[in-house]
Amino acid sequence: MARFYFNLAGKQNVDDPGGLAFEDELQAFRAAERLAKDLASAQPLLRGTTCVVVTRRDRGEAYYVSV
Image 1 (spheres, rainbow, N blue to C red):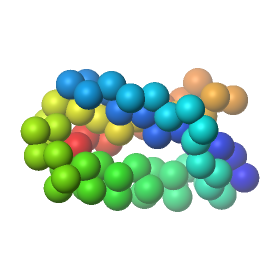
Image 2: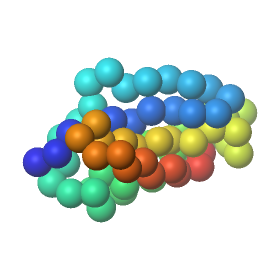
Image 3: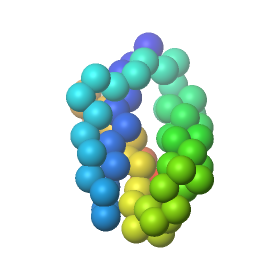
Image 4: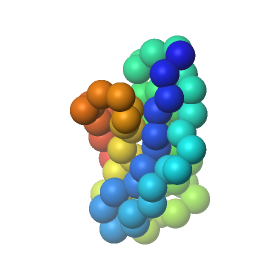
């Protein structure tokens, strides 16, 4: 299992200090999609101005999901 970090970037910037463990990138990406959807519902002002950024510290990869 790898540890993924879910940061927010854009109008709202928040770093995830602990991360979550997932079996693979697809599971982490799906979690990021759910987080973005939940944020868009709870904080409509973030829509179109903030992204959920999924990263792994052991790799230089990042996945962006718009809120």
